[in-house]
Length: 303
Ligand code: 13P
Ligand code: SF4
Image (cartoon, rainbow, N blue to C red; front, top):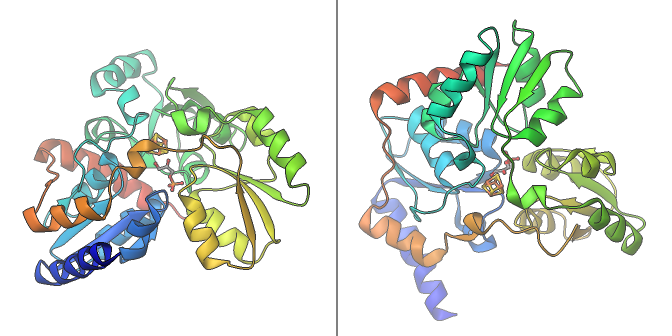
């Protein structure tokens, strides 16, 4: 207990010394969300990264999130405390493979979910997050959309767009393994609960859910909604939901909704990151400039 307290104090001291700000995704460990200056979804954290005046951004999330911060704030030092914290979905597409796919659909606009590498973003026309994917797709002039890399988010967007959506075959392993039977079982156990799903879930799970949101969308929705919720996304979000709403009840849709990559950073690695100034995320300038165009176009889309 004392050790943990010492680590927390040292992190806070070093944060001041280094003029650093700590950003954490909603799926991070509870203790990481608690020590962060800001926690949020991918869209919210990208916006936070841009407006920070600190010289150092310590990004507690996975690699693509820290990369986005480095793309948007090249003048800052961006640290990812666990260099191997990566997103399996982002690894399901390479820039080379995307270049080949683009040749097949020369008239299509490429919409790239932010869960992707900087190189893939650099090959894309515009980025999106789970919070703005529908608005981004519908903002485009093109009628054909190559949507990468999440096939489930592509399918979700296709419900709200008349455009022809051509999906990449990627997916999030954590959301893709949530089954209809999980939702049915959870509903039986908690008949008064509303089911909130993330759009990375499969269509049949989404069909059985009451509402679909990004993680911050869930955080906002539950404030003024009912009292019981079944959550069909990564379980780290329950930390914030329970903390903000101690009188309400939240249930994970199944026992398997864990993204190990999002649990990689702990207080010790966060402290080490600030002590050693590791691991610095850098993007080759040519890639950064191209990826920035795709991210900037996304940030200009009205929600
Ligand atoms: P959001 O928090 O943007 O909904 O992102 C979900 C996700 O999978 C991040 O890895
Ligand atoms: Fe990637 Fe899914 Fe983990 Fe998010 S939850 S980092 S999409 S594997």
